[in-house]
Length: 108
Image 1 (cartoon, rainbow, N blue to C red):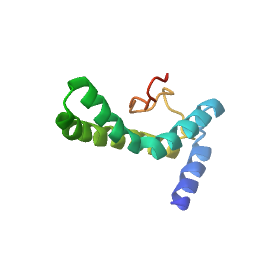
Image 2 (cartoon, rainbow, N blue to C red):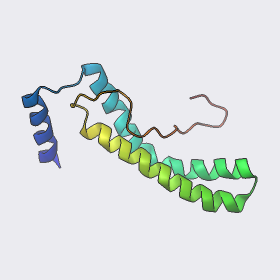
Image 3 (tube, rainbow, N blue to C red):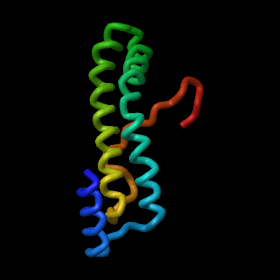
């Protein structure tokens, strides 16, 4: 894995496709957060579906499925951000934009 990272970094240097330092820093901040916290989409979706439908059975079934899909998307987005941070992209936004987990009564 370390060898692949070094190979990607050297390739980016050779072809001069470095991104701006601010964009690279943003990708390196957002990526690990999404990797580490991707699993939190599962309980968050269960709670949200239960509240929206007022039906605990739907919350556990539909919310679980929705949470697993969102967790996969968020974790994959984080991996792509970390792997591609030295590569200049057309836009600074991630390929997948899962909603962030929010604490009860908190703000985004």
